[in-house]
Length: 211
Image (cartoon, rainbow, N blue to C red; front, top):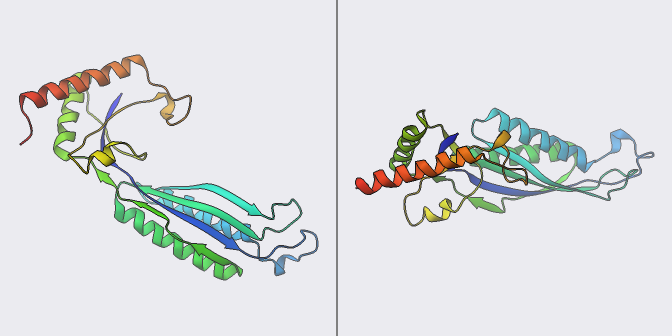
């Protein structure tokens, strides 16, 4: 029911614009098309493939805007976003470089113009090993079982607090693994265990503060 966080994932975001040429869906032959959406579709698929193939990496295409946006027009321009997250900065940064190279190769092969930059970058925040071990010991004392260790894909206040002091985080399981949605919920029993664990952690820490 409880887990100890190892790190808060780092994040980077890449706005992407692919530009080709529009034309009527019925009069522009396939061999003459420079379809921006075809290039974007390849990038979307590659983000998903790379994230699934790379342990710890999360890849998301969060927006996709087409122009001219007509049912009978070849897309001239696609604006999209690539977001990457990972608990290890080197993994995330390597993925960003690889995806940029893939987008460049795809655009060149399909006769498209590409604008892709990294507009946002937030390093990962490792949790303090000593505090995390103490928190895991409290979980085990309260629940009678081992404390799973996992990274947090979402950002938390602890990532800012880590600039001031060591941090540790405790997770409580949510029904169905759902989070950041209205239907997110945790049972009263699990939340009670979390409170008991925090009390046990603080009590042990007060008795034997870290050096």
